[in-house]
Length: 273
Image (cartoon, rainbow, N blue to C red):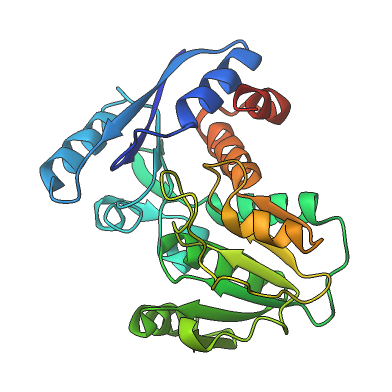
């Protein structure tokens, strides 16, 4: 089998996925390639054409990133329960002649959070999620199912409210960015792109924000390797991490769906170290 895999998104210039998946294939002795498919938000036909190649068996698996995590939903034959609950797809594959939309972001985030936090959070678990986009949906879903009390902070309150409405079974709170109270949170997760290369001096939180003792900071941004948010938290003696671990975990889970082989996470990590 020669696995043809890839990533849909726009833009894709800084993606680490090719390095990660090439390492994963090599570690398991599998033949294959991982390609980038930059498709602009307006190119609906380009998206359909690419998915036709998956249906035809020409491509064996795709990852999906911004801005297509929700755009592809209507083009799937079926969504996994996780993807349906989150309302976002980041992994695509064929099963039983059906095009399946899956989401490995949520389990990938939770697996990495538990790996890197190394501490019991304040009980009851209290998390503040910054942002309300597709990545936020996965993080909120993961935390809610793990028993956390979640507050969503967003600049676009209507977007945050839509997120809350789609998770009607959970008790979620929404606050405006301008009225943040962060000292009650044992975990703060940034799901916005603020602080991403090339805007590395930006942070989603105001300058001189003081964090509560023992707050854990998780920034989904992984380029640069130490974001300003992470740097500021560490300067106050707190534990903080970027989203590189989540990137590896969600990629490993997708790889396993596509190939049926266990992913060598250490080899994937080494490829981007």
